[in-house]
Image (cartoon, rainbow, N blue to C red; front, side):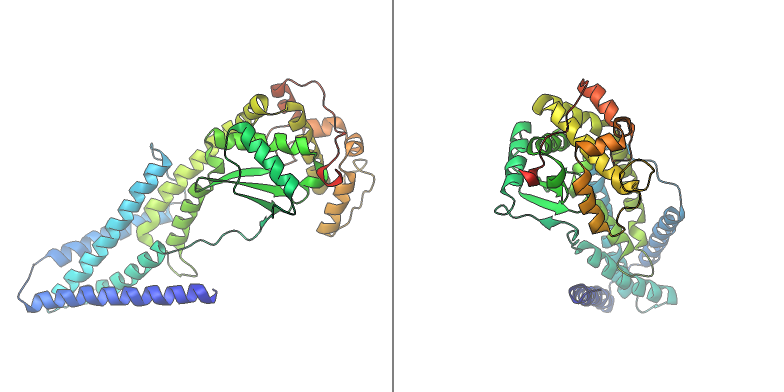
Length: 374
């Protein structure tokens, strides 16, 4: 845990203790003024016990919950309201524990301590700030002007605004993401050595087609909210989860999993439709073929007669450089055209042969010059 997170937890814990002291003290003050409500504290404790038991059963359930029949965003809003109501229930219970301080049975005291702990957990969960991923490096427009121009052309062709930022990531296929309504594009560090300018543009058009089609798979904000719920549930190095958030999180997780499962079935067609309407299909086929061959080299470098060398460099960086050299048209001749056309090992769910059928292409050429050599 870094110093900033530790300081954040200390400040939130202090705020939770102060809030709890005010609530319990307010209950004690009300009791001294002669206010007494019999049986309410016990009823609240029974209600908390029931919620805790139900959450524990859900937590111990191994099977995934059936996805609710509602949009995931509405589900998240409902779950947020439920979490707020549970937090309010803890506050009210703590107040009534102070109100019945004269009786002070052991169970009241234990639940007062429990409420203080859970109030702290809820406050920490509400103030979590997820850190951005560190495996991507933002690209500067001055040093990568060609890539920015390609991204703008692709976004304009699909009818979207220009991307707010470009990022580079090792061994990643091009991807377009929607982050809080802003368009961001990830381009693998190896892409300029493999694809031509027009091939990259066609592939970005295909990825931007997912955003235009409203696919949940590229909605980073939605995934970030689900990750927020998970962190709120499990905490950071906490021995016990926040059991009151188990049911909302499991429902959100089930709904998100189902949404992504449905997106997998439609994403490929959205890509194809975008290329057919806004791009050049042959450039897209060339790009996918090159990336497939590239992934084949990285995943199966020692297959006999597949490549010139049966023992490629073991160092990952050297292997990437070796792949850069070999990725042109000669590589496809060595790898075998049928292997590239029919494999799904290149990180793509649909074989290139199937893509070509959907794109209505009989042949494609791989002689285009990569961006890095232009």
